[in-house]
Amino acid sequence: MAIIKWTFWGVIWLIIAAFFHYTLPQVDIVRITDTYEKRIDFGENSIFWSHADVGNSTALGNRDVFFIQTRRAKGDVMVYRNEDTGWGWPPYFKFDTTNLQAEASDLKSAAGTPQYVAVKHYGWRNEFLSIFPNAVSVRVVDGPDASKGIPFLNIIILILFAAVVYAIWVRWRRFKRARIDPTLERLEDDIAEKQGRFARWRAGRKNK
Amino acid sequence: MLALLRLIVIGFVVLTIIYIALSIYSRRVRRGKLYQKWAHGPRLVDRDIFVQRGLKRYDGSIRRKLILGVYIVPVGLVILTVYLTNFN
Image (tube, rainbow over all chains, first blue to last red):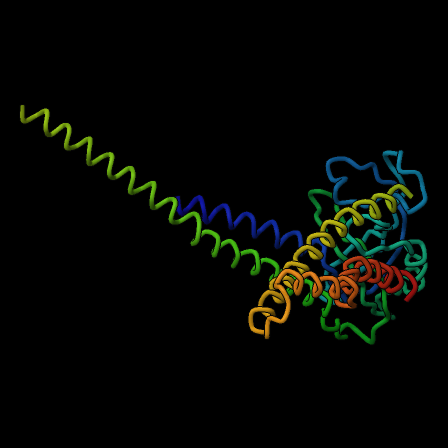
């Protein structure tokens, strides 16, 4: 029983952690190597893509998506998509996709003359699902070792979330101690008493 | 436009639920405090009249209007986010 309980809560917390890891902004220091657009036919991975630009038709099953190709300061490559989040989830309220693409194109640089930028983004890159993190903003930085800044927003959101969880947990524990535990104990006492009566009745029959 | 409408409608419903719940809770807390105050005071008037008067004063107070922040703060945050994401 304990194993089932731990597995259940483990899975729940894993989902919550994944949710925050996907949704909260992160910053990468990268060098933009190219920007392009590509038509995407959304399939199983459609949940990991955003919607058409705000104001455009949402009826079509496919559309062109902007991409930003980069090499990270760490050495590996990363490809970002660049899509409006619009008024939907996650609540970045991003409408300036095309402007961002123009900025990113402007900051393209070759390996010989690198221009490093900080890309704020959310989401995951996964090759097996063909999904890409969504770039939210680009900002020029001094070099590959530039500071990413302290993620104040993430700290605030996670502290608020922890506070809410703690508040619910404390109330639930109090409720359980006051209402559920006494009821369960009464039930157990009841059952024990009935079993005792049954045993006495059987013992009485045997002795006859 | 449909997405914006959806955000507004869902947001309004959720915030209204929070607003109503918070209003009722706050009024109850106020009522409890008024009972306490009456019990520890000189008891010059009847208890129910004392509490009624106190609640009437509470209904017109700034403290009660502060609960409207339930609507104002999220809308302000959305506007701030729109500005920071797109125009900054």
